[in-house]
Image (cartoon, protein in one colour):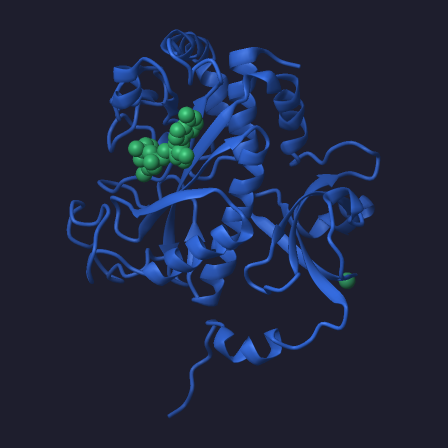
Amino acid sequence: MASSPSFISQAGNLQKYFSLDQKGTIIAEYIWIDSEGGTRSKSRTLPEKDYQPEDLPVWNFDGSSTGQAPGDNSDVYLKPVAIYPDPIRLGKNILVLAECWDSDGTPNKYNYRHETAKLMTAHADHIPWFGLEQEYTLLDLNDRPYGWPQNGFPAPQGPYYCGVGAGKVVQRDIVEAHYRACLYAGIQISGTNAEVMPAQWEFQVGPCVGIDMGDQLWLARFLLHRIAEEFGVKVSVHPKPIPGDWNGAGLHSNFSTKEMREEGGMKHIEAAIEKLGTRHQEHIAVYGEDNEKRLTGRHETGAIDQFSYGVANRGASIRIPRECAAKGYGYFEDRRPASNADPYQITGIIMETVFGAV
Ligand code: ADP
Ligand code: MN
Ligand code: MN
Ligand code: MN
Ligand code: MN
């Protein structure tokens, strides 16, 4: 039988090489965020030892190949900011999250972390917690949601959310592998579930303090793409992958401060929501591309041009969970961010709106 070309990795065959002695070296996978909200990465060999981000070499890449720099001045610098154990290569190998800097000593245009880190430092005494719910859709190599008929549609939504069983969910192996890989890497992944649209899934990361939220979510996104690659499956974070009566994908952003989490915290929650209401358009502007296709006021969303909030209301911009309303303290959920939004931009603008610019 003729073998057809396959893009699916034969990772199992690699096991014997993965157990070879590295002779006193480790592999550091430098990861950065590109101009389109994707992750890129490249590998380098370093002497084996325990590294802190500041011990790691600053590196660089060709920014003209990623839309991050012009061809005549193409070097973009990679400044390590966080290190994670590598769940793919195992051993002492590491994943290195890096910020992008231009050669003139300023943050690269797509480096949204730098400003957000300043806001987090300035307002650190409020101990901001974030929990982000990353929804995504698995696609086959023809960009069709995985398991959907090539010509036609699955049966209407209903059985798929938190679904169990063939015909209800697809590619659970990717979800399980990603969950374990995140735990190994030290990501505070708090859970996962199948979503309303078939082939759509969600994982949650949090609660994380300050800048760690963006760092951990980006690392978790990298791992999702990297693991799905082994299965020959694409990951889409488009907020409305299929038009019509199919749920879109969001990045619900849960937020609280020390004051909100204490007895009587509801007045701090309400004060923050009031401030969010005065800057609705500014928030929408950084809450993801194509979000207008998702925030229609249907399919468990609020309309894009209207700010609203309510207890247990999944059709509002902001939801106060029922349990928090009953207790009188806790957190709130900003339901507006799209699945393709940048977590640094989301957490940054929430801090700026609630506590002021720096
Ligand atoms: P939903 O009911 O909206 O689907 P999920 O359970 O999917 O909610 O996600 C809730 C997220 O909120 C989790 O990431 C969790 O860690 C986070 N979270 C819980 N408590 C807080 C809090 N006090 N402040 C910020 N985030 C929180
Ligand atoms: Mn080269
Ligand atoms: Mn959720
Ligand atoms: Mn969800
Ligand atoms: Mn939610």
